[in-house]
Length: 302
Image (cartoon, rainbow, N blue to C red; front, side, top):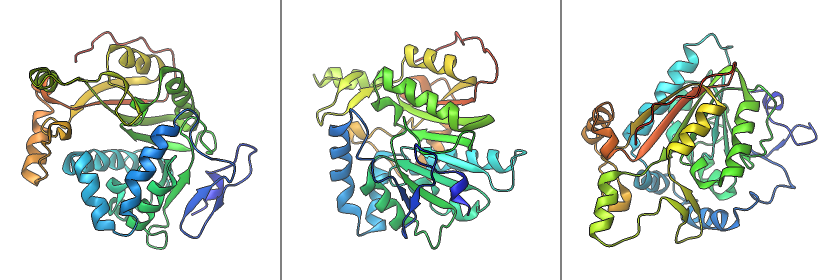
């Protein structure tokens, strides 16, 4: 893979790629203003450096494996079914362990996967799941999503799951700007965002617990749940924007996280019904790079 045509430093020089397949800039020391979150992420990932199976089990605790793998496959099918070049590029912003691309990156070998995360430990776990020698089309990049060391108009697709929700408004806008910069003309995006769940909010009220919608979590991480303001932001920033729902049955904050294939299938079915607005944990935004002045969408439903 000719990674030098994709990754670069701020001065335009190619980024150094180590033997593990991790591109790093020696001057990058962590995302500005997210020191507490970075520390939390590093500590959380460290126990899984030695075992890929434990890392996969840990990922299963925080995301519905079947639902998110279906979304990942859908995006890849859209990429290879488009009129894109033979080697298309998918950029995963805030990739974490990158678990959803395992095996799929082998199946879709024509696609170049660029997995960006500000936690080096996350990327080391990712490489244990997808060793560079076996996944030469997967490159890990140690960087901040608001200052991506990627060439302009590089990506056919940008994917980001539950990442932008941890950025305050001013930094989110910097993230939007970077996404638009690296997307090719007509390139597309998928953003998943946790949302206020009416039934979960009710459960918290009955238990007399605080249901955080915006602010700092107990471990110091910032959280902004998806709401009308963030929806309006995205409609202004991107084209052809539409909203879907997922993880209707998966609520780890209530210690309810079914992992069977049947549960994943039922979860996906419920996500296509009106019940999704009551049950779904994730709002999913699908869109494209802004190619014209698109009108803001007025239809919004929590």
